[in-house]
Length: 458
Image (cartoon, rainbow, N blue to C red; front, side, top):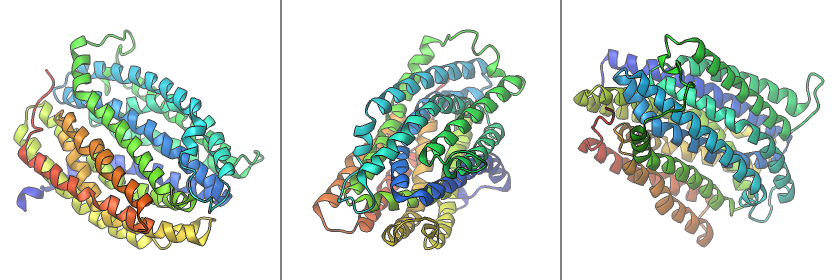
């Protein structure tokens, strides 16, 4: 047990990294929650259309995360050995990759907008109009496409600073952006302060404006703080990246990029499997996922702490220290999520009542929230093991561990249970969440074996 519990200095270091990320993600998710409730006040069809598009946007956002993280593995270790030229190269890689991915994302989402949204419009139309849901979804999607590029750029800057342990500037820029987003949502959705009542279009417009603001703040701060961010000096003077490093990033990062895309696409497919039980399930899942995102900030922030702390220790060739930190962080994440899950379960009966929707949807949402709360400790442990393996460049293992598991276990399980059994959708959801225990066992075994302990930068 002593091996799993750190001293005061250890937790001070962890929390110094994790708390700004928790605050940033917490405020972001709390205001997203407020936005979701605002849309929920407009109507069920609007809420469902926005929820479907946001599920599609998750695929883009997580893929951007994968592209950035692939280079970020090297970035964290370059920071660890104080190689600012190496950090600069990884930054350039992220910028170019983000631009390419944004162009690709816009092309796919706009070219196949009707087919993608209709993919989730199944069942008997038990809640609202399927045609209306499709129309609102397309309106929301069109405007949201303008925010893809600024999102990719701001994530590039924020991730590079976090890899160097600078979590405060990304937090501040994100807080300003989400406060602006929430305020604009209220004004534009409901037509306040003399503005027209735009509904879902207002929600999308508010999001896009806030993304441009966030991108502008973090970009300007980085370029004006050369002494704190030496990598940014002459970062755009050329696009040169050593071929050898590009090769290493693709070898180590490609599985991670593919993994994030496949995982997020898998989450979208899981939602589609659940949606065959009716639009009420889509609406209930949307309410549940909204509050779940607020509580997941704990293990997400701790996962980022694993990537930063363990990655820098590996870059400095402090292998035993990295292994010791990984064990302590995994245990800390697991125990924290037990507490967070308990709080979430208490909130479950009350949160859906904030929505202007049917009793059936509210009851489904309550049950989905309880299931997510029960399974949260499993999510926390899995997340920390994933980031530990990834910090040492074991991206092939994390690819198998993460997205391959989703596509070979979770999705076939959900597909069969939703289509070929009469098991309630709540029990189906619980089974698909609880299967995460298998990943916990496998991940913990791989971490204990130490297969991830290596320095990958020169």
